[in-house]
Amino acid sequence: MRIPCPFCGDRDSREFTVLGDATLIGRPDPSAPDALAKFTVYLHERDNPAGLHRELWYHGPGCQSWLVVTRDTRTHRIDKVEAARDVPREGTSR
Amino acid sequence: MKYSALSLAWNALSGHTRWKPAWRDPAPRPQYDVVICGGGGHGLATAHYLAKVHGLTRIAVLEKGWIGSGNAGRNTTIIRSNYLLPENEPFYEWSMKLWEGLEQDLNYNAMVSQRGVLNLYHSDAQRDAYARRGNAMRLNGADAELLDEAAVRRMLPFLDYENARFPIQGGLLQRRGGTARHDAVVWGYARAADGRGVDIIQNCEVTSIRTRNGRVEGVETTRGFIAAEKVGLALAGSTSLVASSAGLRLPIESHVLQAFVSEGIKPFIDTVVTYGAGHFYISQSDKGGLVFGGDIDGYNSYAQRGGLPIIEDVCEAGMALMPRIGRVRLLRLWGGIMDMSMDGSPIIDTTPVKGLYLNTGWNYGGFKATPASGWCFAHLIATGAPHWTARGYRLDRFATGYVADEKGVGAQPNLH
Image (cartoon, rainbow over all chains, first blue to last red; front, side, top):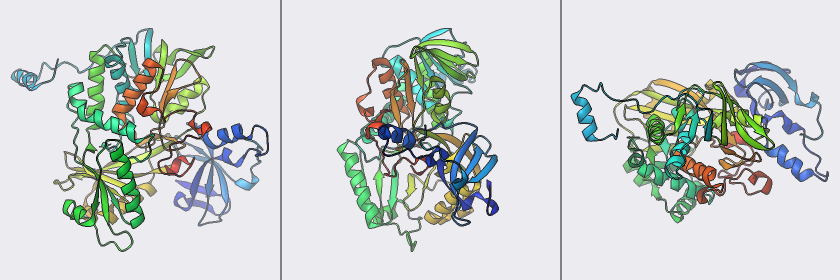
């Protein structure tokens, strides 16, 4: 698999480390009254789709950027790669 | 027909032309008491124990392809019960005991071979951890022996003991562990369940679960709607897809795990060996092929094939452990979709939907668990209460904090 890094260009997936579902960047508000329930869902539950999946990858040996990669989990086709810092935070995840 | 030496001799006389199919190929009935989704080892074992232990009769097992075509046919066939945590060890030891009596129970040769499972250690700290694990195993009635380097050298003289970075100091040996013929396990359970009236329906994919007022009504399939009072999901990597149709969002990620087999060579590994300094496990099949595997690829995947980086990683670990396999050619490799859970342990539990039962989260340890998974899932479906060996496998443990994280890496499925 090759990942088109927006800073470094098309690179081998060996250069990247995958963290998981991109909902992880939408960290719940720890001071909210329902924080415990929100964090339980945030930390443990996943949509786990067969199809397009947005996920966090880290380009350690390259630009050291966190990326949000939109990839098809059935074919590994990559549709979109964005810098994670440019992806709007949802505030709280669902 | 009961399989025996006599039946073999009798059929030999007629040139083996009179063997009957080992199970029927029934059309789905409109309604069952229990429908098990997933015709792998776990689903078929569940049906078998529902019929045999709990006396239920109107049971169907629905399989989208042919039985055993998923992970049951894609694993490295290792059986063992060498776990540390009290949530895990009694369950896997119960599974080990069921393996030991499986062939008599099923009247089927599953080629259960207790050739031993040896986990190597390469440092003082790892030795201490293995000693602790061995003690936990023995406290739960399993067998465990801590071997020093000399003892491992006697067993496996050809390993690389002189590795400067990861010298082999010894290993934790479970002699009762070993391998079983994965396909025969599936066929044996299918034949036994079928013999007790279970309908095994192949080429019948469950597309969604029909519910009403929080209660399950049945399943929609590619062969029409099938009504059922109780529905059990034993779908491994596809669990999230079907469960989502009943409104469930699960603590599961689906990942691909690759396995490998070499060309057939003369016997040289008579046990199962795992490398302690990398992720690599190997045994030799009766046909002579080296059967081995390592890590999952690490990213979510529903493709039953993996990437080259892990193939290289596994082969490098193999070469570091036993350099003599270097000139053996790789014959086949394949991938299966693992239901990786958030703490690395499985889930056998009821769900918020009445009548819907869940059996998932096997990570990449599902094969060895097949008998106990079926036993405990059948117990749950029949009685409504968890079997005592599966009490830790609750769905709500991530909310309550009673997780069973054998490896201690937290809610990071690709590290379990």
